[in-house]
Length: 314
Image 1 (spheres, one colour):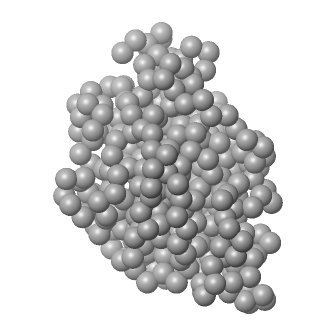
Image 2 (cartoon, one colour):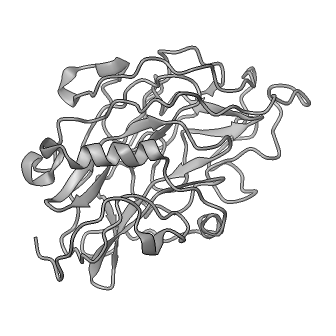
């Protein structure tokens, strides 16, 4: 690969970017990358380990040996009410630059990259927060292995693309919409320490390097990091009943925006129970492989597919 400058790669948070919204891991400091990241690989989503976790999709990161795959994994958000905005590669001023992911009250712009499992390029169709609990869309999440009452099924149209970057030759042409621009100015939280550790482990695995796996890593997902205690939600609200819309529900759009493509009466499904995340963590899953069939209870869905019974349609 061609590099305009070669300086040591810094894996942890870049000091100069620490104050910037969404500053996080996978920062490339002092290196100008002129080769596009590989297409997103096809992989299977593992089963959720326990209530309260949110899926964070896999992505290509940059290290001393070039691009390497960071497998997707289930993560406990740093606080109740926060959603994950994935990072993305963008072509800026003749080089590829990594725009780091972050936690925030709404999902922001992530380059139009279709990471799958609810992250279809704009917003997030995998679920939403309401009454202090996270509600899971079973059409795009593999949540059937544990008892989770906060579920609904909403089929989403999935225009599958494996392009992993925005701008430049062959890149996506998406631009931030009004809601994503508003989300960019909200208060953000950096990735958790367990997310940073997860990327560090991936960087040390030669089998995850694109130069070794040729863009098809065998490790499609990773063991779920397990903290000692899940974040606790406040006591659930009872006014309005289980099916009533909540004024502070965090959807995929910007502040105050309706849930994308949500039909009337489908934003908060009737019969859903508003309960805080479940008690302590369960045993961690082992690292999975796409060729293993159904590792960890995962479904045979492609990267941009869902984890539920209601399959996507192109």
